[in-house]
Image 1: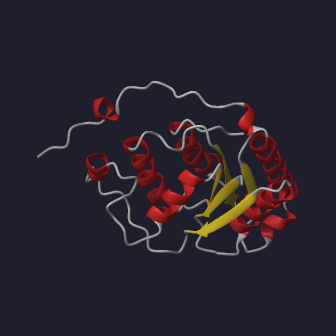
Image 2: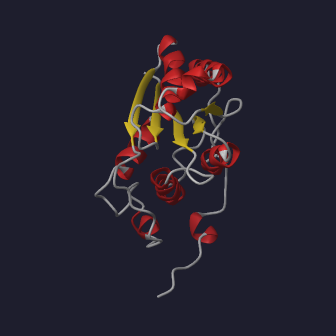
Image 3: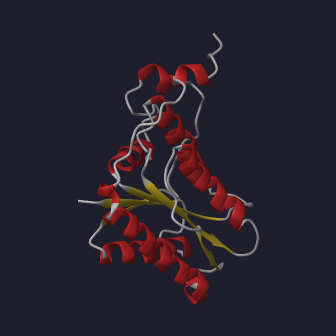
Length: 210
């Protein structure tokens, strides 16, 4: 069954970011697509240590194994679509979301780009400034992994919990993105992906200093 995984980087489990994510997922569920949300924000999540063990082991896992990142990576690889959501924290994503992006990105590059060809988009809750940069951080993760992004990211305006529900344009676009993702995912099997030949990871990555 087709499945979309959403990862909420907001420490507020039921905050504005969650509202945007749920709105997107609602449209996917109407199309018969299975959905799942992982609450990453507010959890203890380690940043990348640049140990390069992912390139030595190539087992699809990060050696840091006492947080949610490996669970997220495993589910991202199995999913057909991925939604990343974050509020704006000092003009960018939350620290938990950034740690996931860094570590999942390395794991993907070390293991043959398993996210290639999947559908992805981002949801951002913002009070004032920084929405574009925050969205770009998540969208560039998708682009770096050769994923497909239907339309623009979802941006909802609000500070306090529930504020984003009054942003009719933001909520409307969340519905639209969900519909676009559903449309792509339900026709996905008609267009099989041909593997792209790229330079080997070993050639692209700097040698670790001893």
